[in-house]
Image (cartoon, rainbow, N blue to C red; front, side):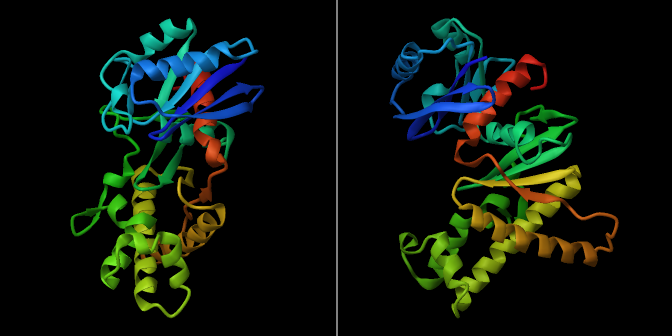
Length: 295
């Protein structure tokens, strides 16, 4: 079965074909300013295909309400909100269409084909400009009654500040610049991580705080949900950064387990495998899961 997949972002739309569990003929075009133009761009890609297409799968920003067949909540593409987008796209293509939130797509890439593929209960945690993620319960995605399941970044951690405010590299770099009297554009998170390995005391403090808050957030997720596995992904860091983060988090979680007298298990945390095309892969996974009644 061949699928045509679109990953809709604020700046660019990625697209590819999915055939035999592989992405083929990947491409990108600029996100247009109107829904009518986006539909035309979709149709141009579809009509230029030399393949027989059996379905369309989308990854989008925003909460996807499958019952009401529309996108809700916060989204970086505002014209996607508030109408039956499923019906319009099914009419446009004359094919079955599935649509899922972009973070959930990245999570589904891990659950069905990546680091969590052999689990039933798992959590995907995505760290970018904010923290979000996906919950999987008994082999199915769990969004909650209000579609806020997985919005981990909203959890309060300290003094009225939430997980996203305290434990993203972007916010860590912002706090460093503020303490140093610098313009926030002068030092990004990579620069602050590098400075923390020198004698820069402020950088060391801010990086330590970042690791500690991130460990606290994962601790809360683990003991709220008790999954088999937590998968860490990021839209902003390289793999080696994730591995360093993982080492720090594991050390801090072990310390917290010891302090709380918990000796019967250690949280299992791994890094993601989907890479920069995770949303495309997950959109395909969502299509097949929907066909089988799993999503």
